[in-house]
Image (cartoon, rainbow, N blue to C red; front, side, top):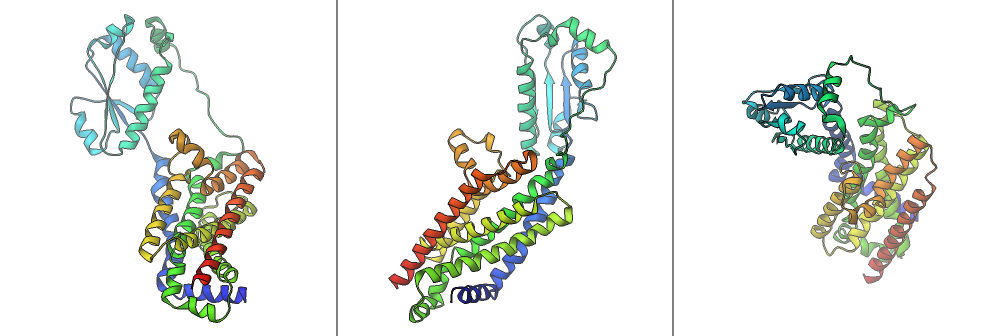
Length: 368
């Protein structure tokens, strides 16, 4: 009876045009948007203008050394009309060198540079600001700004700089390789949370609860049949998203990926049903599903770096199921480490959510 009821539930859900549309449209929409929107970062060229008010020849010398480190148009001199370039997005930021900058610098006095960000792509301007600020702080107290050192650096012949590479792992650092697994897990989570969070409410509206009671269906069979139905649907969503892996030829361990896809579908199927079980109506369950989906998006590790989170959220994020699934893939790809501990933690999440679902299903039939 369990499998036949699961099959019936799955057929019933897939006959719903709303659910069918979500299942087949969301995975491709999420993956395509991720590829199109985020792949542009791979071609990002930061453009920074230098506007100097310092007429001292040493100022040109100092700035010339800095600009020689950034070839390819990243840094360029601008005139007083730089504001229009910032407003149009032609420049991400402008650094203003004030008057008597060189005189104070070589006298050992504290100097300041004015940073003007662009209102377009402000997040890029913020990264540039923090990067330059950290660089200047690291150079504080060093002989870098000594006049004799600067003259030597400026007149000495050029030498090739070291090339940075990752032995045998270069492809794992591509933006697509980073974003696509996150898209697979997130698209499955979002769809399952959206459709599973109304499970009990929809069954009550269709008077299926009464039918199951008359058929002597116990709470375990009722809950597990729904879990299996949603898990299969979630796995189908993951497979549809995984087609992007094949199309883009992104390297991945199939065994690990498929295992995580199953666990991800099972966990979020249970989580969606739990949201339905604790909600008094469809409106509240829909609201809960949106909140949980937003939290999952934030703590997945693909959008907001975990290291940049506040301390009180960092530990929570490192233990969040979606982050753990991505973390497992990265550890295996980069270091070939068997993710035993992390897999056990995910299995614990699945076991707890599965148990709660069974209890809620039993209570639903018993209460009726």
